[in-house]
Image 1: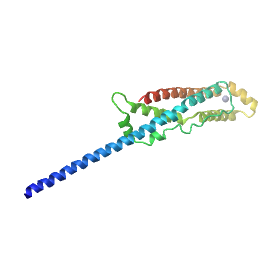
Image 2: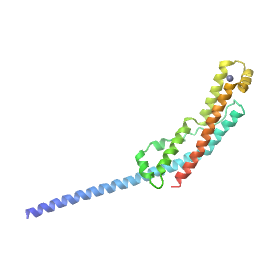
Image 3: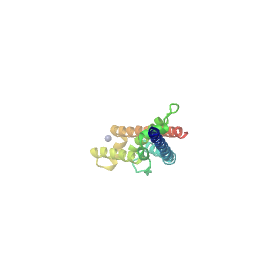
Image 4: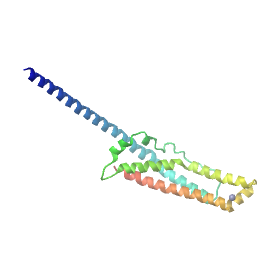
Length: 194
Ligand SMILES: [Zn+2]
């Protein structure tokens, strides 16, 4: 009698342990699913509505700098600030969550996501207004070293080899960014296909 009771007690304890384990796993799984849905929605909206909306303007602004440098203009240009064009939302989440959400052996969206935000970080280092400001500063400090009079400055700027090198460097830099924006658009389209 007492042996039987002991066995029942052990069995009940064991079963409730298993039940607790299973329900903990289930709750964890449901919480993960809910969290993953939130992350997925945030990334999708950021790429589609924030980054995606800025791409055309960003490309046009870099192209505008190229034209301005080629025409040897030195005036100021009005640029957009692109305040929301950054990877903060992406960096707010855990990389292992991204892996769980986006990796599959058939289609590795995890890899595409990393590539997308690497380009965003790269572009963020030199937005059009910074790029153009740096160009103007570099040209002006070069001219300051050699000349004082404004008229000669312009002649020098047009004929000097060093000034031409500076121009070519910035044009190459802008062209690289134009092609990175194109690549970014391609990757985002591919990623958003789901
Ligand atoms: Zn010079």
